[in-house]
Image (cartoon, rainbow, N blue to C red; front, side):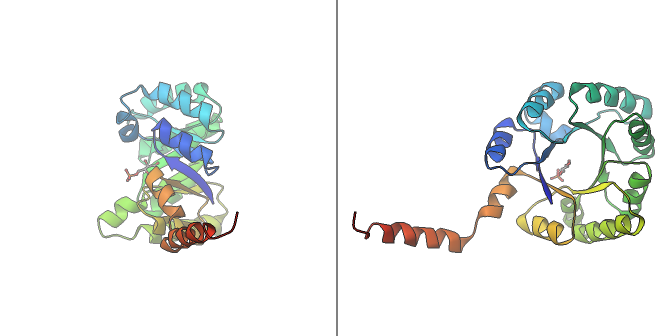
Length: 214
Ligand code: E4P
């Protein structure tokens, strides 16, 4: 499973890259707004840090506007993937981008039927939001299982990108289900490495090492 980092914070990206864990980056308007910087500047800088798919979202919600933005994003860097919303206009833009050789990440997916439409439109990635489904007492990981099965049934090339990840169990389940990608906030990446027995074991080794004659 590929690990993307779900952030627009360059310091977090640098740290995760140094850990050797990052295959790509996802951003969205909410994450970029937190930086106080221009979206294009942030994406250009991320492209200099990570050699992998970098998702940049369109801000328009109509087909023409999305296509205009998609063409601009595609020229920023070869690794930029255009993030489009799962609406009828977004699907139309997905089809047009695919035909123009522009990679796409269809976002705000909350049902298997939506994922089926994105695959039929030729999306490079589909982003089902597991955490937001869990938030409303639905089952986010059940959606991942359904999409993985449906895509396998029909041999779609669209990659399943698990998004809206809230905790390590989401990552564990995504890997068990065979998702292609999991996009993970920095905080959760750090949590993945933590185990109380690792900490206790290390503390004991450090203590015992002091008893070894020098
Ligand atoms: C990633 O592509 C999504 O925009 C992101 O994972 C959404 O996460 P959230 O539900 O925590 O905002």
